[in-house]
Image (cartoon, rainbow, N blue to C red; front, top):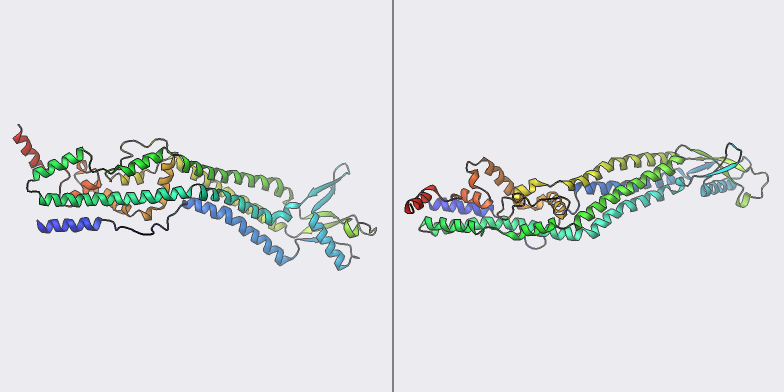
Length: 392
């Protein structure tokens, strides 16, 4: 028997999680993987296109080329190119013969509009960082710590039960005390469960998360309006008529009123417009999916941790409407599952519990570990029969 008890003690000691003291959980993820992907694409893609636009301008020279009269000097031709690029006004006549002007300013504002787009798409990220991440970080640190501590407390409780059973001369007294402890719910550690139940009635985190994704959808709709209203209007116009009767050439009689100019950067505008439309269209289903995840519970994580004595949110049916802070915290616990050392242990115990032949006697990790340590989770039948014989 001493070898069996020693083996049980070693088994229980190995099941204990090491205490992590000092600075811990520095790698805590405060953004979900899909949210991080949306952030990198929504903010980084416009910056990439802006770099492309500036690189094309620096490598190919001025983004405009005007066909100045042949008698113009090089300085006059350069002045005409600069003047037409500054104005970017297309002069044409309508059906009634009246002069009509059309602004082509999206070509000039393209790099700066991409920079503004990146800044606007980063605003929801800033909202989440400053409005939600500090509170979320505190919640995750506490919950992860308490989940691991609750698991350790369960193992230490089994160790203590094993020592009491070894020292007890009368097994009948031990099982009476154990049944009394179960009835009085001494094995429960309700702090964590009550904290999570409190988070179920809070809506600060979920409101911030909904606002973040709603702003992303709103800004994406604004991008569609901008591309459709301004870029589409100049999407196919490579040449335009520019008036050069301004500045130094306003009094020159031999200078024509209009000359033809060609936009060498039209291909860049087309690439930017089409790629932006494609990328942000692909991001919309991802953002909507992020919102729909708040409409259902992640019950797999809860079911695993129901092996703890004080964790029965599912069995008590405390889970109501999933749009609350508790559901957001569960999503981030899933994203930080590597920080939950107890999760892998409890997952294994759940698998083993489903294969054992005494399922009706095993409810918590305490029950299962007592079985592995050589103790039955309930009073043995011969002791129960003894009680019946003594009290007919």
